Length: 105
Image 1 (cartoon, helix red, strand yellow):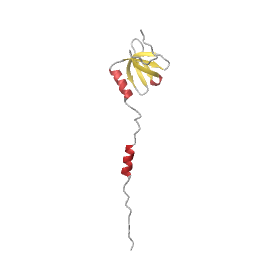
Image 2: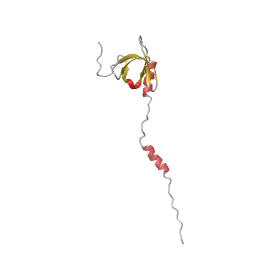
Image 3: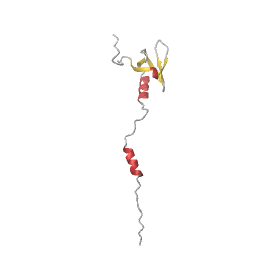
Image 4: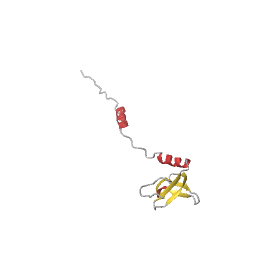
C-alpha cells in the first residue's frame, strides 16, 4: 500500500516583506528645509547678506527663488539674479556669518 503524502509549504512572502520593512530606509533625497528657509526670509522681508565664492558681499532682500537661482532685491542698486552654485553662504544682516568675518564697528 502506498501513501500519497503532499508537502505543505507555508507562504513565505509575508515573512520576507516584514523583514524588508524592518530595514532602515534611506533618507529622502530632497527635504523641504531649503524651501522653508527661503519662504520664511521672503515673507519677513529679512535683510540678508549673500557672500559669493569670490568673496563679494551683497546685501538685500530675497524676492524669489527657484531650483538654481535667487533674486536679490537691493536698495539703491540694481536687483540681482544670483545662481546658487556661485553662493558661498548667506546669513541675516546683523548676524555673524562665520568666525572669519570681523564685526564692523
